[in-house]
Image (cartoon, rainbow, N blue to C red; front, side, top):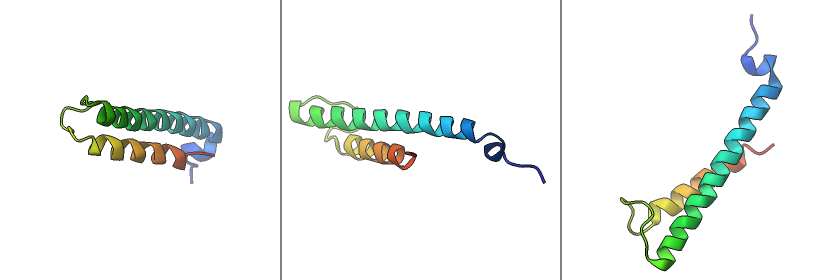
Length: 71
């Protein structure tokens, strides 16, 4: 029985998880912050989200997804 790619090279899996973690975390915080700022200052960040609900929920979801990859 052959080993999976993760079992053969755990450092590559750890590196990939770190890239996914930092990307999702930064995008999530950026989306949440820009939606919050747009709500306060009155500009629209996402054209389909004039009340900034989806931007803030999506930003929090991305940030939490990134935090679940923390090791």
